[in-house]
Length: 193
Image 1: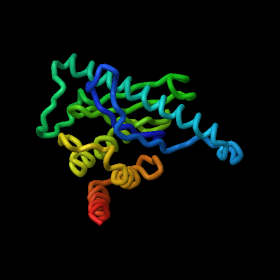
Image 2: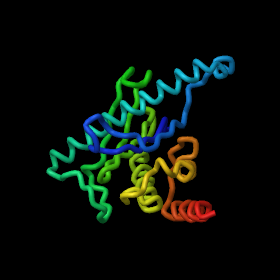
Image 3: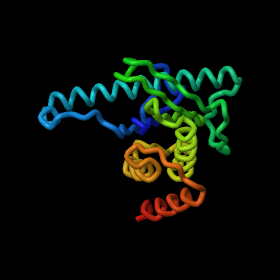
């Protein structure tokens, strides 16, 4: 099961990437008494935000490094979307950096955007990469994220619908081409309502 998804900027500012959207799918089990404590919930929110920011910084660094090594600059213009092999990577996160358990991050960089799936160790990384590529292609086509005036921050409801369709509750799904087309058709119908 995927722990979370992050959409952030790549190479946009010296202070680091800006988180445009993130979603945590699985939460640690917390007893009901602690769940109602406001201080605990606030601490948990701050902890998750720090974890997401740490992953985004690492992915940002790796994506920029890959582009420098391959001599491909960070493109600012909207051009044909090609998801190069150099723009995809896997990052292992040891225990405590930033999660209490070991995790794996599958990431993909497209122009000025970075997309990351935070996975458990037992997740199928090939399936995670295929899901991420499919998700990124759909997000770019549907929400026009590469347009100058576009921002996922302004469309959280649509982002949630897309995430629920392609990764319900963080589950990686084996989808055939026909199943993907069906999901896309259902999504396009519900997004226009």
